Image 1 (tube, rainbow, N blue to C red):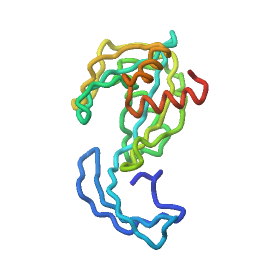
Image 2: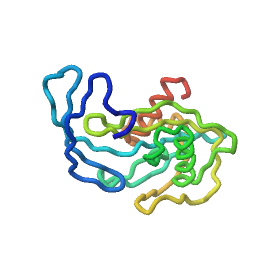
Image 3: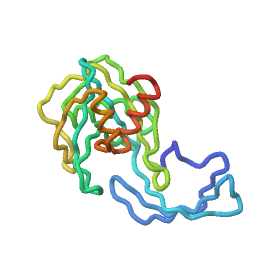
Image 4: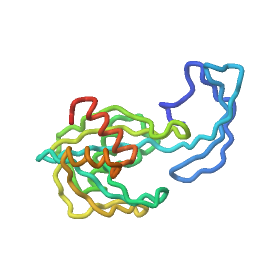
Length: 197
């Protein structure tokens, strides 16, 4: 389990029955005692995934960099902010989390943030807490520039296109449902709440 979701404050894991595991995902049936019902252990199917870093990169002109990526579970290609998983051995190390965000921005989009330009952390969010402990660390990058004409992503990824969008364009895409993945919606919502856009 992630350190961020470990037992505390009356939560007690009674038993974990592993069902499946691969390099990216683990599926367990977990029997847990909850603080609100200490006498009633409850079994729940939980998918564990490594945490991710998600980057909303602004260009010097104030446009946002998005990738269009095929998503097998949905049988669709979605416009998304660049994101990638963090090595689980270092998922609570701020330096590694920031490095992952910078690396994923470059690998997936071909854009970089100038050396010395900090990434602005926007906190974290849980992607779908009804069945997974997966969470994402959200960042804003400023003054992003394209340094490579093609992205260099993992073999399992299928990034079809990289484009820049204005804030009003992305707002329209979100409102119409054209952009609908949790990472993009979470970053955009956090930026709106913080007055960044």
